[in-house]
Amino acid sequence: MHHASDATGHNRKTSFTDMESRCWLVALPAIDGRQYVYRVYAPDDALLADLFWDAWHCHDEGPHPRASDLFDAAVIEKLA
Image (cartoon, rainbow, N blue to C red; front, side):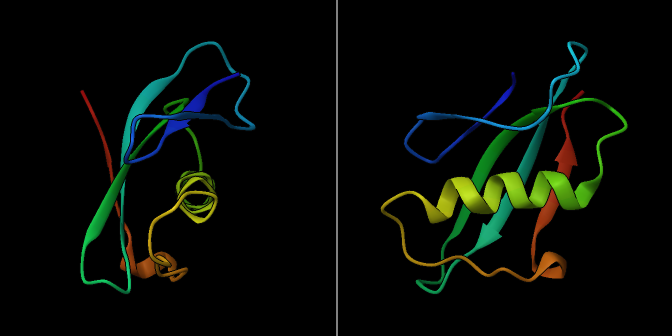
């Protein structure tokens, strides 16, 4: 299983099971005006919506102020 890393560096398992994964960065704006960035490990062909929800759920389970659940508000980038 792969994982998403929250802002504190804690890992959370995701639903991705493909052994060939890449690191994606998913930035979520929150109500405190900050942007929280999460690493999500997933295959190259992962759906952006799945990456978004993995990061959002990781954030939602943490101690940080509520993040926007609007997909269009997130910034998603694949690291080389």
